[in-house]
Length: 306
Ligand code: GLY
Image (cartoon, protein in one colour):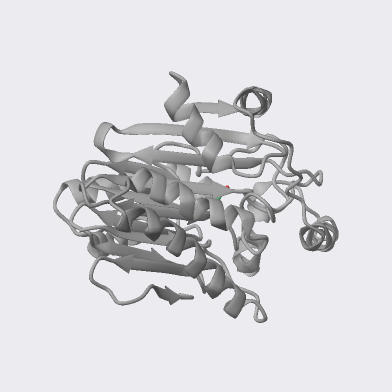
């Protein structure tokens, strides 16, 4: 029984965007579904879904990624393949169109799990990835506005940043991810992000860290979104995968792991989960988390904002 669920980031969707966000989510799940329907692998399905979201400037991944404090884009991405606990990731990668596909190359073509910074960019060139500028005019304007607000707010260190995200969850809106199980019962997860607005150069979030933003085991797969500094400490997708291993289904694992996060670090977060039996689950503590899913037997893709 195959199934796929994708998210477009935990946070708050701006009022004028919902229809476009819904369309973007649906298009992305359609791409993954095309792979699964034809007997393809969950690994290729989650890559196809995330590629569509990376190309959509509404989402904070690939084109449309948010800018660092210095006005640059540094992207993180990871892909995980459940049957062997395989994992490939990139951190702080610049000027490519599809960071998730580079993460897949790390998994398939190297003996490493995570490549960062200049090394990741050199590897992209070696793999034939072409130069692509992911900065959009809209993100530049937002960056200028937020940066001004931030500076006027006497920014000193990260607790201030965290408070800012709590007061303005729309800052977090971003990160994309997909998890799927295919007709062979294999599970995979993929997550891609520009990180968080105004992050310091070199900051790496949860997305490319195994068990933090992305994880897959023989029991299921999970992808998270929200403030990475919390999820890296909770290892939210690893905890979710362990809950699946203990026998919870995806909806209950999602609820349980979000409770765990709320009772520990308490940062803004969201998660999507698939289990090997074809159930999907999702949970978030932010106002919105656009997501879309399809389970074998459904007549159409279901899209929701929260
Ligand atoms: N969850 C995305 C990040 O914190 O980078």
